[in-house]
Amino acid sequence: MRKTILASCLALAATPLFAAEHTLLATPQTVAWGYYSGQSKPALTVHSGDTVRMQALSTCGSPERMIANGVKPEQIPSYTAPIYKEVQEKGPGGHILTGPVAIAEAEPGDVLEVQILKVDLDADFACNVFGVGSGFLPTEYPYGRYKVVPLDRNKMIGHFAPGIEIPLRPFFGSMGVAPSGGKIDTAPPFVHAGNLDNKELVAGTTLYIPVAAKGALFQAGDGHAAQGNGEVDITALETYLSGTFRFVVHKNRHLVWPRAETPTHYISMGFSKDLKEATTLALRDMIAFLVDEKKLSRDDAYMLSSVAVDMEITQLVDGNVGVHAMLPKKVFTAKR
Image 1 (tube, one colour):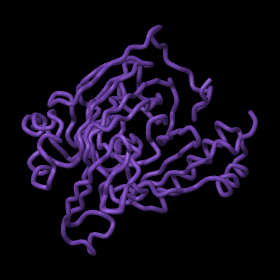
Image 2 (cartoon, rainbow, N blue to C red):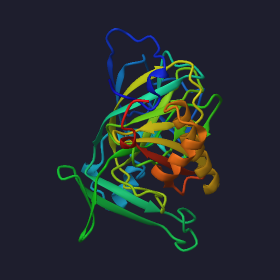
Image 3 (tube, rainbow, N blue to C red):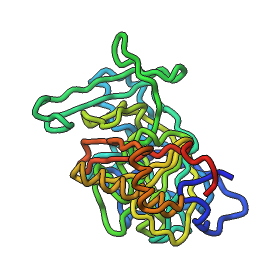
Image 4 (tube, rainbow, N blue to C red):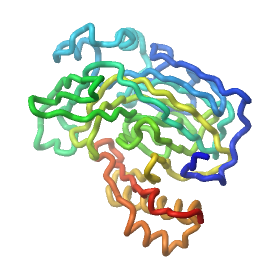
């Protein structure tokens, strides 16, 4: 049986005998431009155990902007233009996210398990952009630049420049659920997950998010073909993705922060405007995981975190900075 970060102590909600498969395309009626909201109307309602394939736009801008910077019109997915022409409700953020998907069984206080089954590149280009006043070094780059990076989807390589090739590991920069109230900006990650920009969350990994609104109201977007930890100029290799997600609701779990699990690591996370505070939050949640799930004493959990856990900067540029703590599974050699 597949082990999960929350282990067997999580009781599953009742699920249908046969889980269903759904597809949610990106259209003017199925995207949220710049916000997560507990008051949003679901674009799709599914059940715990169901699978949804979701199509998402890049953050490379309008077709006109992409073409002006060298993207060929035929390279731009056809669903882009109608969204830019027809969507009127925008902000406070800038990401165009697909959803929300409501999971019928999800209630506040539950945990939504998001199994990232597959992530597909839907375009053969990506962009990297920085602008005036953005990024980690805004005073050193008081201007903007837009770079188009060709992608080889067969070799999974991005051709950044002559002699420079970037291995592609596509993932969604933003995956999250709604807050309990109205709109919040898509840019800062927080307890709802959202704009995590965590490059570890590729296909084959699982994200766990505390639920704050009825139905959870999951959204995804901000597709990345690759990214470095930090995302220092404010963008990654931004591109179009489709993702296949399986949703599982765990009842009556009061997870404080999002957590994740890869085939090789357990991951805790922390977000704050202050890097030290974000690190503190990620470390505290890793200690809590070790105490609650691995049954270590608090002292041993702290010590193990020092000798085996890597504290990584997730990103530095989204209002709330992110830190994630990575614990290798291989240190656990026997069941406790």
